Structures are given as structure tokens and as C-alpha cells.
Image 1 (tube, rainbow, N blue to C red):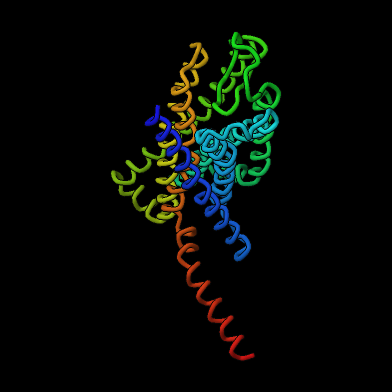
Image 2 (image 1 turned 90 degrees about the vertical axis):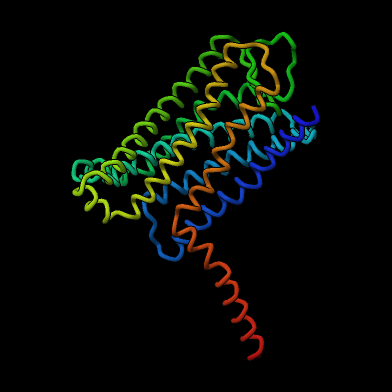
Length: 315
């Protein structure tokens, strides 16, 4: 029990330590870009929305689980449980949706024959904010059951239609609603997972063609930045498939098995949270703008210090 408790606590604290500053750095870098240059690319807009969704997941999931794992779960009441779980589910859903959207956009961008995608690309860029708003509304609607049926403690040990999230539980009033909600979650995730798989497969095919055909090589050499961005997207997609794929397997198992071992639930929740914490590392390591911004921060601080000292000496 002691070893499992230590691993559980260390795992969720690591998610907080990595995920919170990582996503804040990405958001800060893109905000700085907009303020300084008044210009940001479509891919960067999508990445900033992904960072925002991941940050929402870690703040409403990683932190509560760290507190719960440390034995301080008494601080949560039903209202806190409902709000945290609802925001987590919305953030998680937006994370998978935006990752899928990012993969599709990179396919359109890096295609060696962009003319055939020109209309779709222009439409995507033109309606990007409408798409984002629609995804937020859709995922908020689906996650609304977490607001209605979440609570900290079970009122009855005979309740069967329960989805456990460690620091709180979702108690469904009927088997139909319990299974229906679970199926909707699975279908939604599988839909976006399929889009991500197709987009990453197409990107890998383009990379293969890049090394095989001279014409494609000549075309893609002019898109070095897009190639690097596409490789980063493939990495993110693979991470998603591993992390959320395992989570969905566990999710299906929880719908058909009762009761569920607490350790099994802990493992499912940990895998569910890994993507939101680790993906910022991939984005930072593969995005030149963020790297340059981090590189210039010490220089700007030193320049500010020198200017402050100079003004002080002049006075």
C-alpha cells in the first residue's frame, strides 16, 4: 500500500510540475508574438488553443488528484467536485478535438499538391473561430452530466451506475443513461482518434514520398518549417493514441465490470492525464518561435536591468 501510495502521489505531482508551466509557456509565447508582431499563423492559433485545453485539464484534474492522493480530499465538497470534473471533461474533449484538427490542418498545409486543398484550407482559416466555438459548445453539452450527477461520496453502497474519478463520483440515475453517456464519449473519442490516425498516416506517407520521389523532394524542400511542424504533429498524435487509447480501453472495461478496483481507476486516470502534461514538451522542443522567445528572456532581463541601472546613475 505504501509503495502504491508513493507512486500514485509522485505521478500526479509530476503531471502538475510539468504540465502547468509547460502549457503556460506556450500560451505566453504566442501572446507575446501577437502583442509584438500583431501576426500569428493558423497552426499557432490551434496550438495555443491546445495548450489552453491542456492547462485546463491539469488545473482541474492534476491538482485535485495530487491533493486527493496526499490524503486531503476532505477539502472537496459536491460543488467543487462538479465544477472540477465538468471543466476537466471539457478540457479533455477539447484536447482530443484540437489535436485532431491540428493533424488535418497539417495535412492540408504540407501536401505536395496544395491546389486540390486550397478551397478547404481557405474555408478552414476563415471559419476557424466558428469551428472552435462549435467544439466548445458541443463538448460542454456532452459533459453537462458531470454537473448534474457528480458528488463527493456515494449515498448508497448498492448504487451500480457509478463512474469513479477518485476525488468524486458520477452517479447516474439509470443504466440507460449510464451506458448511453459512456457510448457517446467512446464514439466521440473514436471519431477524433480516427481522424488523427488518418491524418498522421497521410503525413507519414508524404514523408515517405519525400525521400523517394525527386519531384516531391524538390517541392517539400521549400516547406522545411511545415515539415518540422508536421513531424511534431505526428508525434503528438502518437502520444495521444498511446495515452487516450489506453484510457478508452480502461473506460470500456469500467462500463462492463463492477466493482472496479481503485488501483485500476488510478491507472486509467493517470494515463488520461499524461498527454496534457507531456505534449507541451513536444511543442516547445519543435517550435522555433517558442525556443527563440525563451532564449531572449534572459537577454531582455539583462537589458532591462542595464537600462534601469543607467537611469538610476543619470539621476
